[in-house]
Image (cartoon, rainbow, N blue to C red; front, side, top):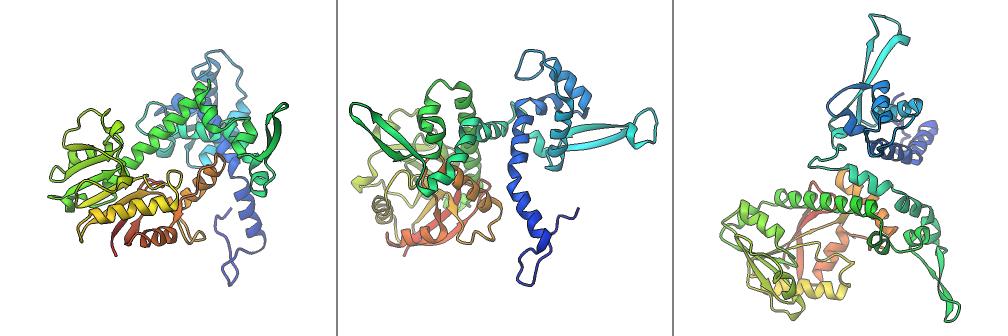
Length: 391
């Protein structure tokens, strides 16, 4: 079957092609749920670097060489069907060879092996993407999707309070309606496996963003200048930059109680203070990573922060922001832009604010007397590089 979609003169899919495209969109969760089963059964670790038949994989699953230590009776037909879909999605390679020299297609031995993409699902690797799959697909988060239509329509109602004080209805978040508690409460309670997957997911994203920041800007041009990380927490980004570019004088600025708990970092000066006091340490360039997220400040506070940064900088100073950016043109979104549109709706389930679009960033910084020099995607969908200068 051809993967191309024929179009009318206006570029829209026509007839059965449009219907097929729509059905493929509606069925994407088939693949993601099959991927979840594939990971939960431990198949990536069983395969390793080998090609195996369904019989071989089933035998190892039968012996309990997976997350479940008890013996089991594997449904080999079900396993085969999942493996076929994983091959279609580029997770597996599929190979066929004659059995005992037979030329009959019915006597072919079919084996499966991991592709480069599939290798990312093995446990213990540097890119433990299995945790991403398990976190996104586990029942508490998955069930929250079913509440999304009512939430958007204003009908995702739960009662709060008690009989004595009186109960009142509120429009709950999808996660809260599906699970009887907020996502914060759920992951803070005794849900060890869920918390483990969520934490591994956060660590993976954090590491990806660190690599993206280092490669997403030409830091070497700042040699001889002072770089200040506002809201730099424990100074990890400045430490990475100082290590790779020792000619940059790196400073990390955060609340006194934050920096006082940090062990001294080579090449990084740790400074305590409050951004709203309006007295930032002197510097040539300011860096901020996820410090201007809408979940942290309202627009007035964000403009105040940006204005304080502008007043601190020399005339030729720059502000480098590492933040998520949604595209203005969603129709033609691709790559990191497209993935973040998916994640942005995922965040809706747990009540996280939407990221800003390119136009919203431009409008915001102009109110602080700044201008956008450029915005560029990095290797991390949640971490664009936004470079500002004085207007």
